[in-house]
Image (cartoon, rainbow, N blue to C red; front, side, top):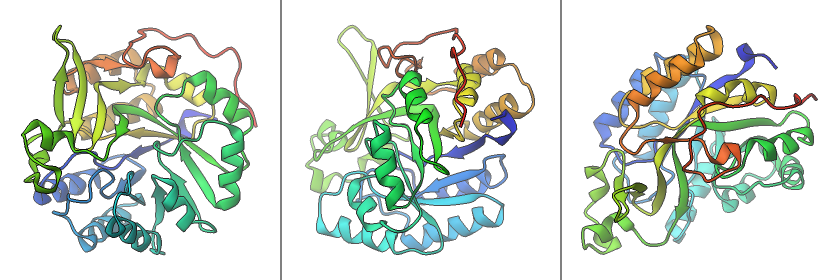
Length: 311
């Protein structure tokens, strides 16, 4: 695989932004070099400032701009109303669906679908089973390393695409409790939509003042932004088809441009890395999981994989 055949994707917005901000954001994304855009609320069903028709209008806008549009499902299903919403989403025939939990996978059986990073695909057997269901693309779970991916790529079913998150805070866990509401001494059922106050989530630090986690409603994220810009050569050698950027509240267009130039215009990865670090939200940066170490670690230089994956 060569760099020019690798696509860039934009993952769903993980945070809660107001309606106008979200719509304007995607109007700007329509003019970028991004190839694939994932749309929809994946974290909390109480985030309803955009309705289904709003998301479909955004999808139509992006499609008219030449983007492949994927509609993303919720990650943690806790109520019948949420399951009903997933059923409605999975009945859509105009766009491919990203399943973010196994209930969506079951509903999509027999159709072409994508699995998100929260679906725990850890081995080739899982990939083969889901391929029989209709899987066309899978997103690598964030905690897996390049060595694990190498083994899986060697046994990847034919015509299945692999996508890796290369930029953004990493989703680590989901809970029935809302940590944002709790931080404001509010019950989950009366959270007053306080997530709107934190467009990049709520930063937590340890007693030693080390940036540790991000609270984002029921979701817990890494405080550090994962950044694999220095690992693009490895990603290409591993036959990764799509590189995913998870959007922060600021600078997404510049981030897309830096990855695009590094992939397609021989822009130096080291230079792009320095520029990306200036654009990141507070918390620092990491690439530890990718290198098989503690997730919050940062490895400045990388060694090229000993052998290239061929299929």
